[in-house]
Structure formats: structure tokens, C-alpha cells
Length: 299
Image 1 (cartoon, rainbow, N blue to C red):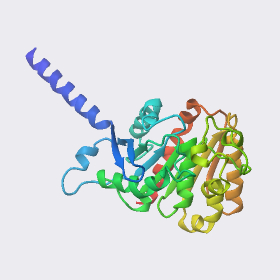
Image 2: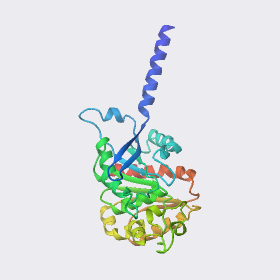
Image 3: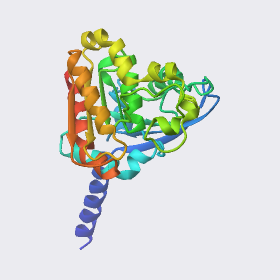
Image 4: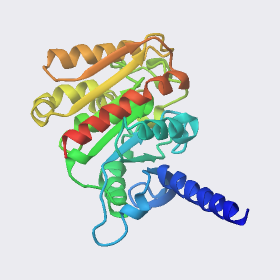
């Protein structure tokens, strides 16, 4: 009887040990930004076995996917809304490789510098946040191991960053990106100019600063950098729901047509669905598998 209990205890310990090493973990922290003069929170999903693999002199380095959340969300939303379980399932099924997922706090910034220059989020992300993350975690620092993604406001930010800095990222994805093809008139207020909820004058100006709007528009930036987008071979994927309440499906379709006309390779899908979490989770898996394939091809 004692021998059976001993074996049962050893089995349970071994099972729990394997389970712990089969799952990743979330590391949430904050940095004091010099660029923004404020605290910025962030969360990082570390793959299974990260702590063991990165210990010692011959520590392993991983690719990294930066994920930008939507308006009204925060750095924890991605992992609390079902993303954690989906990622764990995909990894256990061998459909995605091991890479870090980093979600910074974006607030209502649209991930760009504000029109009045008071909030320089774009500068913060490129000049301060990425170097900070790469110095703190065991990350491969070459372009082939760096990607960016986002949803809604974050999709806008991800596309804008990747189109503006194609030599920095190997791949970009966006779901239900806040894409508005037509530039607002100079006299329009932000609320009247876009279907977005809430006043965004602090970001784009109120009335809208047309030069600032165009300077950060993914459409305009993609056109300006079309030669670099072709030569660098940036891998591009985006999707949107056909019933998107904000009409972002029209903006996504317009970006698809523009990239086609410019001869820029990309993958685009319009699926049934709206702008809700259910749509995002339904297609999150394919976006993660897209980045996983690009990481594998870049090894």
C-alpha cells in the first residue's frame, strides 16, 4: 500500500511539473518613460520553458510579436479575453512556434505622436520601448525575428508602424483595423470626421490637423514607402468583418485595392462578423500562425 502511494505521489509531482513546463506565463510590469514622462504598463507572454532555456551562458533567444490593443482596452486585455487559452492550444497542437508576445499600454494614443506634440507615443514605441524590451528579455534582435500586430486602434498602429519602418519588422498583421480611407476636411471636428467613439482631438487635433492626419495615415505612408515595402519583402496580413459597425471593412477593402495597385504582396480577408471580441478570437489563430510561418522562414 505504501509503495502504491509513493508511486502515485511521484506520478502526481511529475505530472504537475510537466504541466507547468508545458504552459507559458505572463510577466506584467511597467517602465518609467523618459519620452512620455509617465509610467507605461506592459505585459509579456513568455513561452513554455522560457526561464530554463534562457538561463546560463548559452541562453536561447526568441522571436517577438508586439501586440497593440484597441481603444478602451489595455495591456492585459489580449490575455484576459481568451487569447491566453487560444495561444496555449495552438502551441500544444504544434500550429505555432515559441515566441514572445508583448502588449504595451497604448491608452487612446492611436500609437502615434499627438498633433500638438505633447504625447509622443510613436517616438516612445520605436526609440524607447522596443530597445527596452529587447534589453530586458531574451529576444533575437534581427528584423526576421521582430513582428507587430494589433486590433482596431491597434491595427491602425501596427500597419502604420510597419509601413513607416519596413526595415524594422518582418511581418505585420491587423484585425478590424481602424482604417478610414478618406481624409477629413480641415474644418471638421474629430467626432464628426470619423465613426470612432469618443473625442480624439488630443491625437489628431480638433479641428482635425489635416497634415498630421495624412502624415500618420497607413494609406499615405504605404504609398510614400511603396518601393521600400516591395524591396524589403514585408509580410502583410489583415482581415475585417463584413458587418463592422464602424465601417472599417470599407477601409480594409480600400487598403487591399491600393496595395494591389502598388504591386505590394499581402493577404487580405473579409469574413462574416462585426467589430466584437467574438470576431477577433475567431480569427486570432490564423494571424498568429501567419507570424509563426514568417518567423520560421526567417531563421
